[in-house]
Length: 149
Image (cartoon, rainbow, N blue to C red; front, side, top):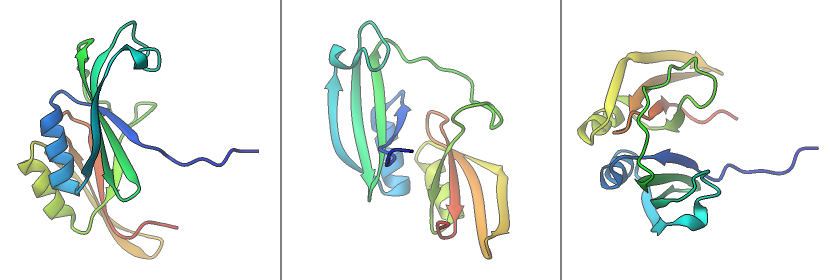
């Protein structure tokens, strides 16, 4: 039998903590809950022999994003993952206006993937979808329409 579980947060490694805080707060309305520098007490959890990071938790209602900026070890930059790569591909956020949110994302250091813009009917409701990238190329799916279920 499955345990009762609830998603705690989404973690994002960032190159510029201030820019990422600004992006998620100005584009989506997240607010900083707390921020702290973390050392070797979290090294085991993060699978590193030693660690020096700053963790910032942003909250919007019951949703949380944990921004992590590495001072040591240096962050690793990888190419953007294709959407058919096994594993994490994106985070999805409901928004009232996809185009306005995309414009805000672009204004605050993100990138809009206009070629992904899609409109279709799902469960009897018209929905609109668009991918944007945050300042570190984390893929975010914007969805206009009410949550299903």
